[in-house]
Image: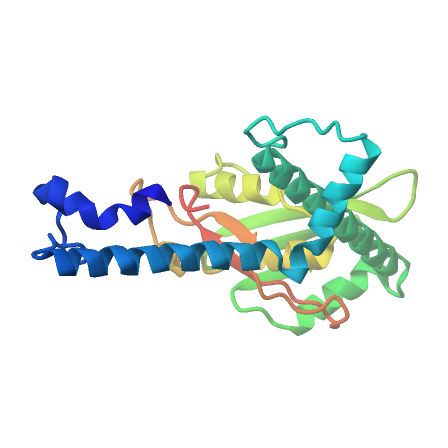
Length: 268
């Protein structure tokens, strides 16, 4: 307030502080008019502050303050001059709590979906049949003789994978493990990278998810990275990582088809 009232005098005392909005007053009349205008503006600021202070929306705040004064017999601890709560920490805690709730809801939904698939008619053989009916280009799937494994061949990528079902205590298959079906030679860097990504996938119980994920590598030598839009990175590596695309079909869709984005390790 004092600085605002004296603002027209600043250019007179220090001409270097003169601006287009606050020039040096050339006559006493101009200075008097400037001082009057400044005083009226400052009074308007005070009135505006008073209006905000008495706003009905703040009534609950003042009622709370008055009640605290009454409850403490007038002994109110003065503020320390700093925030009593670290709001960055508070926001982080809220974000973590929200994420925890979201994760829990997703786990419950996935568990319900898993139970539905395992108890459904036909089991994983039905999933395999539905996948075969889609005739995915460049991918061949054949059931092994043990009745618990599948051979998945990526024709264009030149890779063949063995998908084996693992059950616990004679129950339904709880996990699908993936390994290379290549014999007589060492695995290529590409095959190793694909196997690493498949091993770290979610929904390891879901055969439909796994088959679609493996199929996403079917044209890997011509599929650019979804982030940098390049086929190879600076290390001449193909985008071997796979991440679920944002837009996925509803779980109620039958058969459910998953889509994946290809990513370089440095772009993930």
